[in-house]
Length: 505
Image: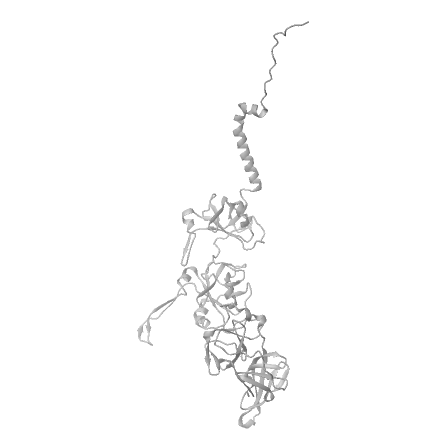
């Protein structure tokens, strides 16, 4: 049976849109999208605050100096954060309320939280020789921070800030810090200069009451080059303020009187200052935190000129001398020449004993090298003269000596001494070191301008103080450690005995 197909409708397959497309075509997402964006921002801020809290440093100060939330935190002139909160912090049982600052440091400035960092409020300050905080005039006060020195210091979140900024002079860890004790602050402020002969060699780091409130302690910083000047017998005095003296009439010159005003420099009138001097016979080098007493105003007025007349003759390191380091310098030995002399009236009243101490070199056992004068007869009336080195004692007149100008070699073994390869060679005067062989003190220096050629060697300027135990001391060139000669002290005169043509005694 055959038949024609009927009018049956043809099937149609229509594509169905994916659900993201259907969602976008719906009006609902456009209403939710702003809400989702706000939620994302809030969530991000929440996570940021959990990882990086808005307040990550707390600083306590005695005074807020007008600081407000929103003010900047700066280091080296660069903004690194801001003040988040300012409030009073009451200390139960403490000295009273203090100011509590909450700071927010930027992520790249978190290293400023080292324990040795210093925080303070920077504000305008004007003084003679000092002008700081000028940017605070236009932009207002701000919190300043000085980064700590050591990368090994632990991180902290709570700091006790300073009321005054630290001294701006760079401080080397090789410098010296000492404490100056006085009955009052004597006009000293942080940053006040510390001077030696009018030259600034350090500064005052801080001034505060002592722990028992009995004195004022000022901490001083001395630059590395000048720290050798500070000895345990160094004298400090205040140079703050102005000294005045007046004469109504000077009868010695028949002139109407005058008014004298004195101050080291104008800056000391405002900033204060302290000076020091070290005796001509300096003591041991002062160590860290050594305590000194500040001279009273009365002592300063009476003794200041005396202190300034001291000449300690201490090497301040005007230039390195690699070959003249202590480890390479020869160490002298002590020599004593002793003798007797007849008393008055031909010795009826007995004899008198005498001695003279020397320094010399012993480059090898039994060989003594020193000033030729050490081997001369100590006196025209000398009897039984003997030369002692350590425990050895030798008849002075029986020594075998070979002279070379002002320098001589001597064999303590009773035989003629041979040539010594280390015999000094004379040259032009130059900066020298006097070798005393003391382990606890640096070698004194003789500058070239203090020495001039003479007929019997190099003459030392009479105004140059010489150590009393330096007679016969070897003298070496400061630049290379080369032996130059031997120092001979006679009365108040000092000269350096130089080598010359060799001759037997």
